Structures are given as C-alpha cells and as structure tokens.
Amino acid sequence: MLLEILLAIFAPLLVPYGPTEYDYAASWQGPSAAHWLGVDDVGRDVLSRLIMGARVSLSVGLLSQLVVVLIGLPIGAISGLLGGWVDFVVTRVIEIFTAVPTILLYILMLVALGPGFVNIIIAMAVTGWVGIARLVRGQVLSIKATDYVRAAQAMGANSNEIIVTHLMRNALSPVLVSLTFGVPGAMFGEAGLSFLGLGIAPPTPSWGQMMGSYQAYIRVAWHLTVFPAIVLGLTMLAWNILGNGLRDVLDPSVQN
Image (cartoon, rainbow, N blue to C red):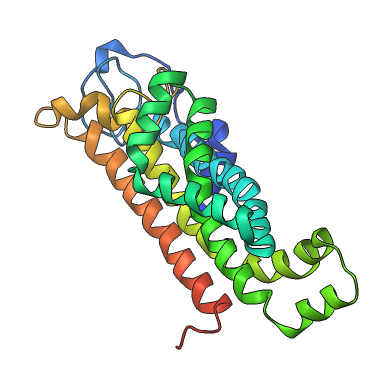
C-alpha cells in the first residue's frame, strides 16, 4: 500500500518510458530487458502504464471514500440523534439503496453521465454513502444512550454541539476502519467499470482499462492482462490487511 502511494506521488519520475510513448516496432512483445513487463499492441511500455495507473486507482479509491464519508457521516449522525420521522425517512432511503446491487447503480449512473474520472467519483458517492450512514446511525443510537450525552442534553447543549463534540468523535473509529475497507472496494469498482468501457477513457492508463482492453488476447499476449490483475489484487490485499489491523487496534470488542 505504501509502495502504491509512493508510486502514485512520484510516478512521472519513476516511469522508464512515457505512458503514451509509442514504439510500433516492439508491439506485442513480452517481458524483456528493455521492457520488464512487455509492451502493448501499439508499443507502449506496460510497466510505465501500470505506474501511472496507480494514480488513477488511488485517486478514485481515496477521493470517492472521502466524499462518501462527508455525505454519510452527518446524515447518519442526524438520523440517529433526532430519531422520529427523520430516522424513518433516512432508514427507508438506505433500505432502497441497499436493495439494488451497487454495480448496477454504477452502470446506470455512468450510462447517464458518461465515462470519466469525475463521473466515477459522483457515481460512487451517490451510492456509497449508504453504508457509512447506516454505520454511523447505529453508533449514534448506542452512544446517545450514554450518561455523558444525556448530561449534555440536560445542560442545554444543542444538537449541533452534541453531534460534533460527542457523537461524531466517538463514531470516527469504526468509520476509519470502514474507510480502509472502502478504498479497495472503490478501486475494484473502478477497475470493473473500466473493464466494461464505462470508466477511465483512453489514453489515460487504468488497471481495469488495461485488463478489459486486452482480455481477448490473453492467449497470445498474456502479460497485458495478467500483470495489471496481479497489481490490482495485491493492492486490494494490502488495503484489506490495513483495515483488519485498524479494526483490531481501534475496536475494543475484538479479542486478540
């Protein structure tokens, strides 16, 4: 994971070739001393495109989850704190979104909005806030029954003060854990959408786009599909390991 972040930050300095630099004479060549991971159908270096693609995957994963938290956190906190008809409406909306497969919502929104980096973030934010809101709502319902929250209410603290001072701070630990699990999920979602041609538009490199563009040639040019799949799989594994570690550290209910 740290390696991916460093690659994304210093990608322009690390790539051996330009990601859109063409060498038609080397088209379809496999791994070699000149091109460690081979080249694609128009002679672009696969390693260079994978390194530049790390920027896309990491940006989609982090930005989408940041927007998801900014939307879901206050909605879940307000729903759990106020209760009544507000909680009823929010809960019904959450149930509606939960009933529809996430990938289907992604596809429908991107068909309507068109492919592109910004539209992917919008699609993931619109559909992804539900999980955070449901998590925060459950935390708030548990926390607001504690003595210190009741004391704050008895002393005349308004809802905004209670949400910011007590509820959100105590709900941040599970939200942080959920965020680390959401990043690889968003990266996988972007890869799937790019695989279907609804994600990042060429010539900008994307791991999912690279797999989708050349999956039909896996028998004759296996390196064009296998290497992006390995990189994506290892990255998702690293983020999930981080999420498990944070959950063990931050969740007192987890027994070692």
